[in-house]
Amino acid sequence: MALGTTKFETTWKVVLTAVTPSILNGFILAVARAAGEVVPLMPAGVVKLAPSLPLDGNFPFLHLERKFMFLGFHIYDVGFQSPNVDAARLMVFTTTFLFLAIVIGLNLTAIVLRRRLRRRVSFSPTI
Image (cartoon, rainbow, N blue to C red; front, side, top):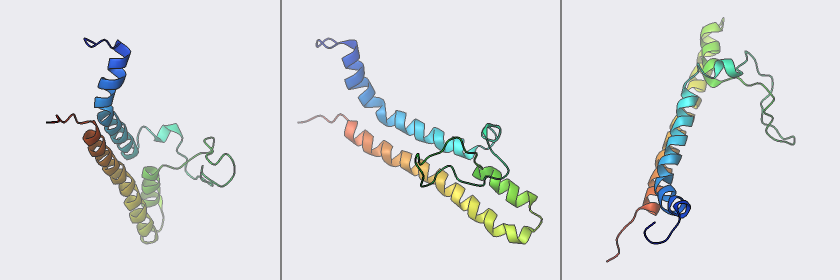
């Protein structure tokens, strides 16, 4: 501000530019953590059986009014409520692997984005 800029310009050009990697990293890690916690999502719309996915080829392609089945609940349902444990074992392992791959993928995305943005934002002195 000593150079004649306004508070808004200082905040927009300097402060937000410097903290953008941390904001994005926090957002992606929060999404990954929410994906790993079943309890807050179960009362919000998890159903025992979801006959159709909320994503299909009809416009609009994302139908938010449809119900969904959370992967964590699916693992619990198939693993502990199935009468044939041997037949359900492969489905439980596959769903668990998919669930872990999504969470690990979100965390790796956060790491890569943070590194790229920190390199772009870093203030290196020119000699």
